[in-house]
View 1 (cartoon, rainbow, N blue to C red):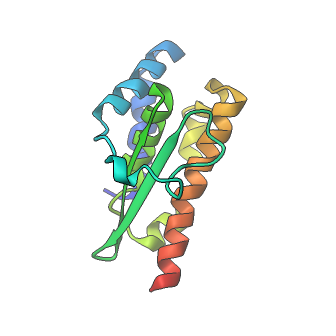
View 2 (cartoon, rainbow, N blue to C red; view 1 turned 45 degrees about the horizontal axis):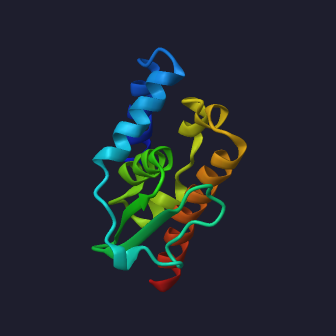
Length: 139
């Protein structure tokens, strides 16, 4: 599945949820499904700056694709980072760099979040792009 197809699937799933309470629960459930990040990967270099909670994103480059893993000490940020990992992990550097984050506004996620959580979300998306650019430069 392409990044765009995954994004469209998320937009469609959110469209079936009637209110923000259901959307909030859905995001939390995504976080519960996220495999915990090992303690040795919870480093300051993997820590996302700008998040209200602690959020770590680790990336590895394998077979011309980037694989993300993440964790958070907060239930909502863990769900949000899980959503991003599910969409972007396993795709090529070029696909990640050329993708957008329009689906976030389509599901209304930024409107639902407090300003500090919205800043954290933006920091997570920037970090994903940063990893892609960094791996592109290493090629």
